[in-house]
Structures are given as C-alpha cells and as structure tokens.
Length: 242
Image (tube, rainbow, N blue to C red; front, side, top):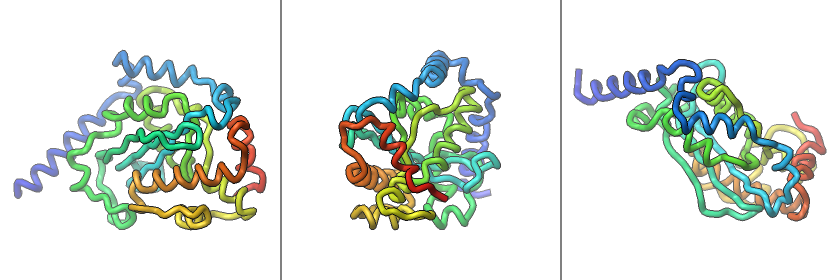
C-alpha cells in the first residue's frame, strides 16, 4: 500500500477513535460540564425581548456529507460570523471538520470538500467547545437554518446531553416576508433580491458571509432597529411558509 494511502487510512482510524466516545463522555471535562450548564440555563425570552440594535446575532453555515443529520451524515465544514445589532463585528470562526466517514462524491460535487481535504482536520468533538462558546448568548441566523441546527443539536445531544435553546431567524423566511412570496428559495435567489453578491458559494464561510449580508439588509427593510427581536421573529411567519 502506498504511503499516501496508509496515511489516509491511519487518519480515518484516528478520526474513528476520536469519535469513539460514549454518549455524554465529554461531560467528564470541567470546561464541557460548565458549557452544558450554560446551555441548559439559557433563557430564550431574555434574548428575544432585547432591542435588535442591542442583540448579538451569530450567523451559521455548515457543509455536510449529506442531508440526513440523524441517519449517518456528518458536518465536514462549519463557519460562524458575529453581528452586533445589524453590523458585522469582524469576529468569525471557520474550520474544516473530519466527519469520520467517507464524503460521497455527490456531496463533494456541491461543496468541493473531499476526503483528502479533511483527513487532518479536527473531528467535531474537538471544536465543539469553541463552536458553542462562540454561539454563547445569541440569536442564531442562517439560510434554511433548521438544517444547521439539526446537525449541531445531534452532536450536542450526544456529547453534552443538551440542545440549542436559542431563538433563530431564517433568511429565507425573512425573504418571504419581504417579497410577499411563498415557496422554497435558494440562497442565490434571496441574495439576488437583497442585492448581495455571493463569494465562494457552497463553502461554509462564503455562505455564512452571504447570509449575514442578506440578513442585515432584509431585517432593515422589515423592522426598526429599536424594536425587540421577537417582533422580527414574528415577521418571518407573517405570510406562512412551505
């Protein structure tokens, strides 16, 4: 076997071993236990009652091995971008993730992440603390954000025995409210409506940046910045959705 193939094999074995933790095993680490308690104690109402201008938002995007969070698919890239009110702070986090399984060619064709790209990347458990600490007390934002939340909640439930309780805003639903439409729309379609140019489409960082720009523009059209976040959450449901 060639040295490259051996290296890839050992990398996958290592990822498998790193993933081979019992349910809730990370809670034995003091930092993870503290994070568990913080996530469990988070009060969503306190976040939604704040004025938009005083609220911390975190825009999230993930790339994955497939679409089924609870049927074997895993995160292979994640990006988070911080906004304070409707302005970017410049703080962000992004990384490739070793999913511990083969990335199907059909998924690589979309996001261009291959097994070779992630062989030396951390597994999600190794960056979970950093990801969750970045999210912290915030309102979560993203395009089709339910997809990203499902993947994060699966790993949080497995490793920390808790889930994200954070309020969220979906840029697609904000688009429906802004455009007076119903249906299912891609990030490209929504970005075009908002006048946002997407760079590096189907990368976690590129899509998170585009979603952040779309969010800031659509939120500005829908509501005044001194209004509470709950009013913006309500607006995303005004026209109903698919």
